[in-house]
Image 1: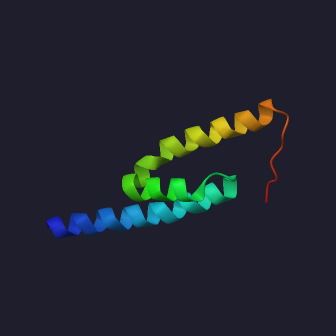
Image 2: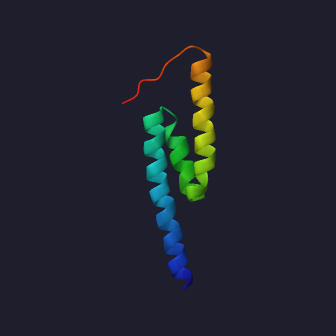
Image 3: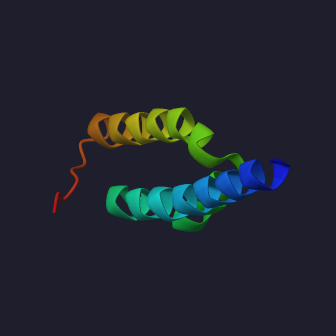
Length: 70
């Protein structure tokens, strides 16, 4: 039974790593940083990622910049 939980945890961390790295790439954030953090923390990375993304957007808006949306 312990092995099953370990496999689920490993798959969750691996899929989170790929998902957050792709999301960071699309948002223009550091891909390696968010991929490694998601590999360690798994889905618990989401609140940190969304807060950082919001702060980055506010910083761009404050300085009069713009973002290119695909």
